[in-house]
Length: 78
Image (cartoon, rainbow, N blue to C red; front, side):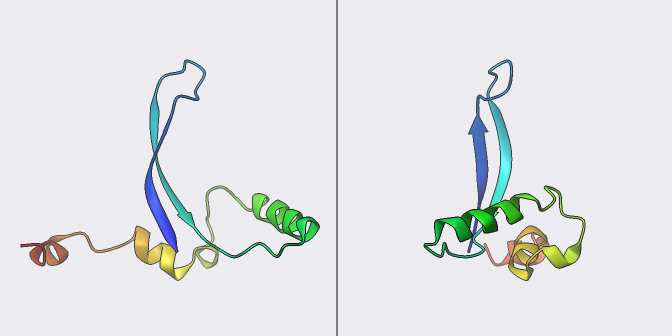
């Protein structure tokens, strides 16, 4: 499952409002074992923030981010 939208914050040093695009992807469930879940979360946090390896991007995320938004889909709206 994917969720995308805009993250609104006032968290920078000058407290100016900021907006950032954000996409999140559900990648699994918690096991109920706090220690195992914490270890798994720590391993996920060691992954690079900006993915360079195509193998790390799921097909669903790739299809969502790189989709056809040109004239062909626009024709179905009218």
